Every structure is written in C-alpha cells, then in structure tokens.
Length: 176
Image: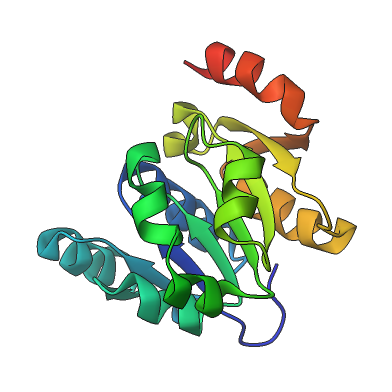
C-alpha cells in the first residue's frame, strides 16, 4: 500500500477511522509503526495505542506533517476547522488526502487543500466488521497510482470501487 516506511495519518480516528486502521493492520498492508492516528479524546488515544500499537496524538498538524497519505475521518461539520487553515494546507501540500466525511464534496476539499491530491470516499458501517462497501471519487489531478492506494486501503475493510462524484449522493443514501 505505502512502500518503504511511508506513514498513513488517520485524522479523527473515531469509530470509522478505527475500523479502517483495524482492517489495514489485519490485512498486513501496513505495520503499526507506519500509522499515526489522532483524536481529541485521551481515552481513545490510549485505546488506539494499546489495541493496535500505532502512534497516537491529539495534534492533527503533527500527524499531517508526518504523513505521506492522510485519511481525514472527522465529522463533516469539523472538516473546515481541521483543514481550512494555512498550516494544515502547508502540511498536506503535495500529499494524497482521502476524506470519509459524508456530504463534503470534492470542490470543498480542493478549495481547502488546493495543492493536495484529494479523494472522497464513502464507506459504510459493515466496514466495522470487514464487510464494507466503499465508493471512491477522485479529485482533479489525482493519479491512477494514488487511487490504487485508496482502493487497497478500503479493500482491507471490504469491497471498494471508483465512481464519478455525481453518483456519491446515491451511494450515501444507499449506505445510510
């Protein structure tokens, strides 16, 4: 998935973020040392360290700087607060950023992170038990190699395919 010792940051590692981390680790796609997870709840950070052996921090910016790929798993209403700031834009510049925030469109993500390659992903709750179905939509300039990273990541939690973003609302309704 990420060759060498490249790092995946899971920003906002709550229920869905943890499910994706669990799937990636279970599949052997990445070792714990290549994953850094963030959350604002100290008890969740402790649980992530203890359960999975990943690095965990409450500092989103620190994780973004350390990452080669960032999975943003915050609540949709928190996305602008997390991503739309100069330091975060700089930390994620030139990197692949994948958002699982329902309803946050590619144009919004690209507006916040104009120098990042962005992918919008819509996983569903069966991903929690490794039986999910995730739909991906790529932003402008995202390469096939970058989509392949996202596909491999989500296939660790079930099935995954790519569609045009115009189909995401239907997928969101079906996943709900």
